[in-house]
Each structure stands twice: as C-alpha cells, then as structure tokens.
Length: 262
Image 1: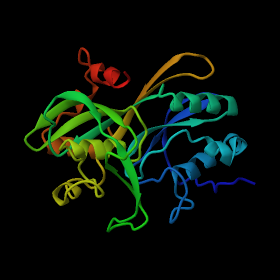
Image 2: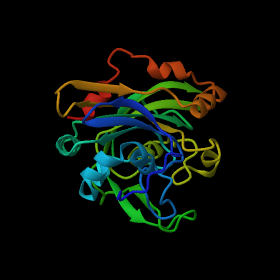
Image 3: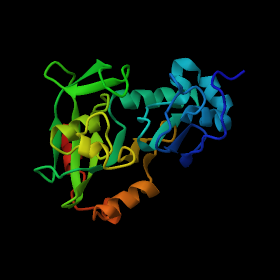
Image 4: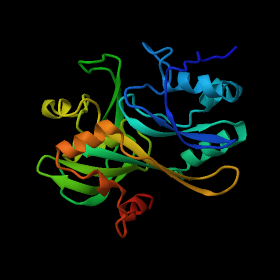
C-alpha cells in the first residue's frame, strides 16, 4: 500500500528523467506535498501516480524523493530522487550548496544596481498574516540566519523589471523577502508585497527556470532549464518586458552568482 494517495489528475512536466532522479516542472498553484487542506491534489500525489513504487521505497525518512520544495504559487523545476543512493548523494550536495537554483522574478521596480549579492539575515515567524493565521513567514532581521541571494537585471521598463535570482542559502521565502528588501517586490506576492503589487499579477510572478548540479551516479554536470509558462509570458508583454531577454547569455552573466559563493 502506498503512503501517498496517487492522483493522475495532477499534471506536471518532466525536464529530465533517468534511473536515479527526475527534474520535474511544477505548475503554479499546486502545492509540492500534502498538508492541511491539500491531501490529494499536490505534486507528490501526481508523482506517486507515475513513480509510486520507487518513491514508496525511499519512504518518509527520505521525503518520498523530494529533495527541495517550491511555494504553492511558484512554478518551475524541482529535483526528485528515485533511488536511495542518488537521493542521499543529492541531499549532501544541497547541504554543501553545490546545487545551483535560478529563478525568474517579475518585479514592480528595478534595483539600484543592475547586479549584485543581497546579504541580509532572515528569521522565520509563525502566522500573523491576515490571509493565513498559521502560514509561516519570514523577514529580514539581525537575529536571523545568514542568507545570500545573487541577482541580475535582465530587462526593465517604466512598469516593471525582470530579474534573475539565485538563492545561495535556502531560507524560507528567501528570494521573495530579499527582493522586497531592496525595493523590488515580486508581482502577485500577497505575503510580502504592498497592496498595489499584490493585485498586479494573478499569481506570484516567480518561476524556477534552471537547476545545475553534478549527477550523483555518472558525475556528469547537469544544467537543466525550462521556458516561460504562458501566464507569465503574457504578464511580461503587458509590462513592456521582453521574455526573450531571459534566455540571453550576457558576458559575465554569472559573475554575481559566483561572488555569492565566496
């Protein structure tokens, strides 16, 4: 008997698949795993409909293969282990910060500098938000844990800004909190954005578009990417932003990202 109820109605894309792991594309508005109010409509329920046996074999102690999570409103790439040895090796890679995750964020304004590293400690807090009394939130505070996010501006207009962000550390809502802290709240962010920003997008305008890591079995460098979802592509165009610029590789594009590792 499977521990997680399989639900083939939960759809997702597969950006990479081999015997050891998957890189899947989570749609927006789909929770990553079951929780209060979402027992059978999560990504993990969909994964169990297609990969139930290997995920069950990994068990709860290995989070049924989930190596990290995305917020419910966030779309994009997520790595899932299929074999215990591969899962364990990838868990070490995450702990040592060897896995590189990149996000596209559509923001209300451009930062002062076109690229840089945000180094602000983040602390978690329970509840207190008008929309969800039990929702864990985060904020910048001196008493928080160290957090670093590299960013670069990809395009901007009088109506908004397209930013690529790479969280080096893995704090709760890190990209959202850090971008808001430098005056660039993400459109549609109902937790951290001001009211005008909350209603500027039908959902959180954040997409995990790229992951890079060393394959735990073959040792091959993996650089897996995905394109814009249709809803965010429409949003970009309405703001006068060019979605094609997100895929342009500028010279030294990863400079700030590399500096964040130092």
